[in-house]
Image 1 (tube, rainbow, N blue to C red):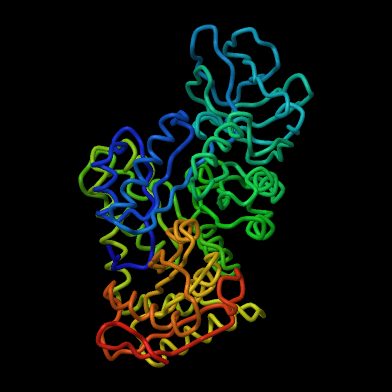
Image 2 (spheres, rainbow, N blue to C red):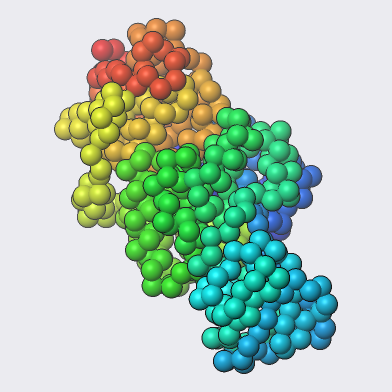
Length: 478
């Protein structure tokens, strides 16, 4: 199951894609990581999906990543006496703590933390931004607002606050229960929703205690202002363009996507571009030309992965959506201009031995036109460092740690193989050649470059480069 593209694909599971046969088809079509959205998935179903994915993984012998996406705090209005009202431009509308059903002049906002944090001039976006209010008078009990963009408003619609820094955790009591259930089940990545600050990530990591890696979803304007700190605290980043496009002007989202992609790559953290990538394929077997260009842009930017949401979870054509994304990735990476774009975005290596080794290995591999760059890695850090350089040859990561292998499924260009750890340097070089030969990356007589940490088996010690020739049976010799 060698992929012919470097960018990875995340596919969300749901009603259209939850049985063994469909998950197998999605993997064969190109899915590298499966996302389970806890907004719609009870614990029993989550455990069933994880078991099914592990079944598929064992039958193909390739590590498959599992990402559990926590719901995060969902802010909603209360109920209306008539079920819905029509808000007119320019009218006054009050949000308060009174549980009495609302009318055309007021409604309950059952979130005292919002009323406490709101200030005059702050915007409130209702129902995914369809209705826009501006706060004019605020107290801890109520907020008097002016309707700037009116429309129909009904019970329990969502509230977004692009200007308000809410003093709330990114995790609710539901998220904490979902997180613990996911960790016990043995998932690989936890996506943290509505992150506002690095402390949100740090709080989650204290609960996780290394049992999974943390991916911060950037979907709040407050997170943009603290992006460097959030990236430093996280293991990966998701550009969650849907909610970001609600709380910020839509025209800002493409440039922010580029900035986040490059910042994450500079930091050596995987970055996923998500939301509405092939939205029309929920109903149609083919995407729009604009959607194809959108996916291609993420590939040209050097994102580690691109994600399908409702397209694979609830759409009519889940396999076709994954297959389409796979073909777009392959075609972009065949484009003669692709390498020049990727090279132009390459950040300078950090002043560490590991980054210097990774950069040197990439230069050697490209100068000698080697067919594969092989990493022996215990924790996965060596492969992540090499992937940061976006080398021309494929990256083959060999690890004795299945957990590291599954986490690497989201990392650009990494073909991961789980194998027994090397006994010594000779064994390491020899088996690196055999594995690359077996998986079709190299032919007899060709050379490969091998990156590792010595002493073997100690995480985070990337300090060695070897060039080896591959023999007729795949064995390699220095």
